[in-house]
Each structure stands twice: as structure tokens, then as C-alpha cells.
Length: 182
Length: 182
Image 1 (cartoon, each protein chain N blue to C red):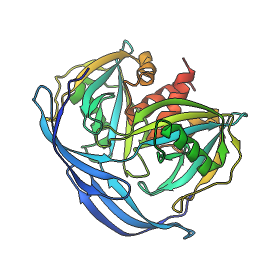
Image 2 (image 1 turned 60 degrees about the horizontal axis):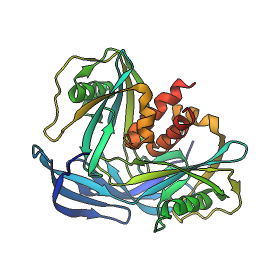
Image 3 (image 1 turned 90 degrees about the horizontal axis):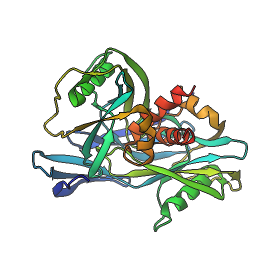
């Protein structure tokens, strides 16, 4: 177990509606490092691998403003619910709102740190099996999302060809296939 | 091919030694969306899957200030080189500086977008085979890194148990195993 680093002088140095930036001094337990660090503080995220009874996966394609180009992704988004079941509740809501698909067969797959060097948040992945289209889309005003169905076995090729490139989505899909190989 | 969104009013709203934050208005090609977005602009990154002739992988364990806890990762870091070979040059330098290992057998594996919703940068993954310890460590003043060797087949279990959790590292390892399965 790692000994705790000591954080001092933590302050919010920038804020907008999506994230805050904080700065602080952190000193290592053996005190040979003491430096100023900058961290972007933002929300937890969830994403879903939604699989139909026929083995098709429902993906969403949208413009991503960080890279100013399209990104083919798993459904998901910011955790908006609260309480103990907030992750699953948010995953169910994101799948329904972005694709209109729902499921009564959910499995928690695991979590990844978004980028522990400069971000504070974690992203949680779920697998939803036997998804069916039951609802209309409910997109946020800033969302323009195209739904695309691909066979589950096409996912590694879509990553290799660069069509799926969002690191958190690639991590979730990689874990899905690594878990299957056990 | 996606039509271009039109960006206006782009301005730097915050800056530190690691990253900038910019804001801008972006309008969709069909003009049904026009909104303000915030993006963190930072450097390209590289990481390396370094494999010894015996099938051991060299990992690095370090404290990560975004989550204030330890993280077991592939060697890697910010691209500091320039020019056409900057990615490979930086990957070679990061491996040597963080672990003391070098290789003459490098393969480019692919890239992922760090988080295309709010970050502008990409991370590039390399596989280095037949790595051997040839150099002393050269750590930055703020780095306190422990080197750990595990067998390549242990990587999926280290992800499943949560010891390797950095999304970009999980993505790189997931791609490595998905590519092998072809």
C-alpha cells in the first residue's frame, strides 16, 4: 500500500460548465518530491456495450469538439444520477436516450481512470445483453447522433482501422474481448 | 465524410505549464446546432509495450496526482521530440529514461484520441520487442518511478483486478491482444 502524499495550497484556478482546473502542491511520503500540479476535475462517466440477441452492437457516431472530427463510440455520457445505483441508472439512461434501446440484462464490466496524470475522474463500463429498440431517441440540444449497428466481431477491426479511436471506448472493448479469452 | 463544423470566437481562457483551455462557438453543417464548447489543449503522448526475449513486460508504477493514488502503467509520456520521427524518437526516449531498457525492434501499433469530447490530443502506442536493460534510469525531478516486470499473459488479469486502470494504457494493451487474435 502506497503511503499518502500530502496535498497543500489546493485552489480552483479556472472553472466552466463542464470542468474545473485546480492547482496544488503535493509532497511525497519520503519528501524527496514536492511540486505544483494541475488537475482537471470533472464528472464520472459511464459507457455501455449494447448487444442485440443477434450479436449486433449499437454504436453512436457524433462530432467531437475536442478533435473537431467525427467519432464512432459506445453509447455513454456523464453520470447524472445520484446514490448507490447512479452508475447503472446513468448507463441505462444514456443507452435509452442516445439509441432508444433498452435491456433487462446488465453486467458491470469494470472501471478505468480517464487520465490519472491530469484528470481526476473514472469511467465505468457496462455490458447490456439482449438489447431491443423500445423508445424514441431523447437527444440533448447539443447532440446530433447517428446510430450504427455492427456485428460484435467487427469491433476489433473498427479499432484497427481507426474508426473507433476514443481511448475509453477502446479500453472498454479491449476489456470485453480480453475477459472473453479467459 | 463528415461536412465541416464552423468554429468562431475561439479564445484561450486559461493556461498553465501543462495545458491550455480554449473556448469557441461551433456550428454544425446543417446549422441546427450552434453552441459554446470548452477544450483542453495539450501535447501528444506516446506509450510503449516493452517485451523482453523471455516474454516479460516492463511496467512502471508511480503516484498519479489526478487521482491521488498509484497507477501501474506502460512506460510513456509527452512527445518532446519534433519532426517526422518525433513519435518513435519520443517512445524510445521515454522507455530508456523511465526503465533503462532499449530495443532495436519497434512496431507502431496505432493511436487513440485521449478524450475527444474535451481534449484535443492523441496518444500513439508502440510495441518494442527484445528489450534489454542497457542504461541507467533518467527520471525527471518530479518522477518517482518503480519498475515492475510481469509476464505478458498477466496483463489482462492486472487490468481485471484494477491494478492497471489508465484508460490509454488499457486501450493499448487491449489492442495488442485483439491484434494477436486475428
